[in-house]
Amino acid sequence: MSDVVERSDGTLVLPSNADPACLMHQVLGWRRYAVGLDLGRNDPTALVVLQSECVPEFTGRGFEQRLRAPTYTVVFTETIQVYEYTAIADFLAKRLGQLKNWTLAIDASGLGQPFSSTLRQAGIPHFGVVMTAGSALNRKGYDVTCSKTLLIENMATHLETGSLTIANDLPGKQELLNEIASFELAATSAGNLVLAGGGKGHHADQAVATSLALLVETHLGGQRFTTSKISNWHG
Image (cartoon, rainbow, N blue to C red; front, top):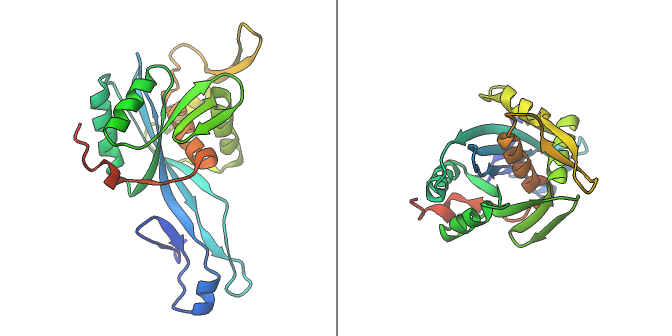
């Protein structure tokens, strides 16, 4: 990693030392941020920042390069007990303003829909994810429907393979791990199995926010948003 250069746009490159032969083989990696927001109803609103990184390396065959498998690390979590949409949008805009490049996904289910409209009116671009039953994901522009089961299973799979990790020095790391572990299978009245936060007191807000941020990187991709897009938002 020490010889990898990070450009101002978050792309990662290996130094070419002005050698044209190296430039011909250059591949672009990245270091960027995905932000997940689980909007609180009767519980706190949770925000999670996920660092996504894909590093270029030499293959050992001359100047040939390749990209390592992407890795995802939870580097920041925060919860706030605020219920006014404009106050939450103001809090969110300040956090996004601290990141170089980012993509935001929010839980737009139920009461999240009017909050999504508030963000759009404020000029804060985002994916609005409506959680559903079943196992499907559908996207139309920045409007997404995704089963909660897919969301949580995607997170669990990446944790099991080690591609998703939680920073060792993250305050509240164990609390987040406990939230993730609280999810359990439950049967609906129709006999379908769904995932739900398990047990009294397990709201799993940060776990849901983590799963939303990861979904951006593993399933949604696309345009990276920047702080300049929210420079005129003042809450």
